[in-house]
Length: 190
Image (cartoon, rainbow, N blue to C red; front, side, top):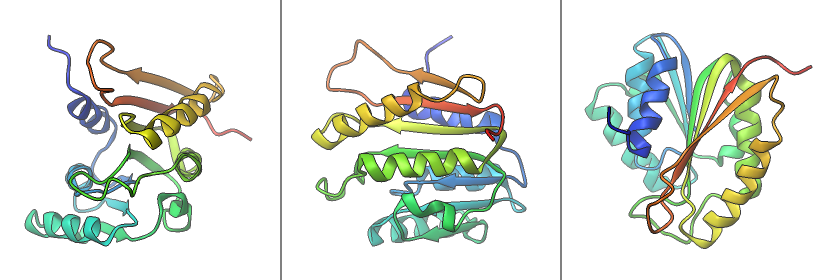
């Protein structure tokens, strides 16, 4: 057995919990790679809600989805991920976030600790029982370090009777490689 890289492992987690007809969320669509992957997993009867604040991200994602002929099963929404609860219904089977900046984009535009924590909380609230939230945390830049610290603190405080949290990380690699936090929802808190 070989250990999977960070992004293949994230996709493995998502493919293990999503099926045709499910609802999924890409909280940080970027160039549309995860959005396309989710759209393929949920099939024609499923729905993906994808968020980004940058117009370039929406354009790149729309082009990618159109080429794959899956655009009709995705809603592309140009707002910050902290607003996802205004657009997404309950019973989300899986959600994914890649925290950091748009690859090959403006590195000054990054996700922020405060809004990312709001988005994580909203996603957890929208998840159905046994739903999965996959967080890919890029912490190799200054804002990423702050965001990573805030996210780690948040997930460590989640009650173990309601959530299971997994951390997947390569600890001996240089240059602050990204890591995954996967959160499985076990029950609804009252």
